Image 1 (cartoon, one colour):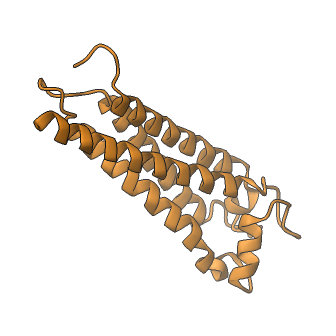
Image 2: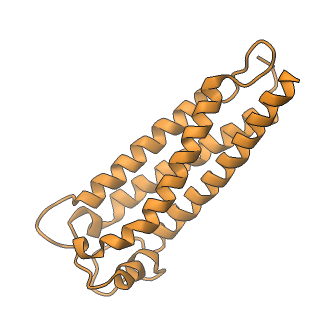
Length: 171
């Protein structure tokens, strides 16, 4: 392994760090959104969307830690290890899956008591509090999506660089 981190390993470390930021934002959302914690004010605490968010956060954290642990590893001939490639590939796929899910959750509007998908979208993507909702940070969902998109893009770039490095050293 080289003493100085290569560009591909630094980019993988940035990717892993962005996933850590995604995890932190998800945890902040879970801790601050009273609508999410109480099924939008019903008597049942911690609704299924809260648990889904927790699952997203935990998987994101595990992916980030794996990527950070394997980012700088190379074989004796300087190629990125299979574990490093696997971590970045898995993390990138996960980030894109989360982005699709975060937009797709609008389709579950009836589960949370909204009359239409557009009402639920206004709640999720609005920058001011939705009328009649409990305490939450209105713009936080937008930030979570934006950072996951950024993470996914950085993951794609890191993956391209890792694959190019693997091909380059084999030539």
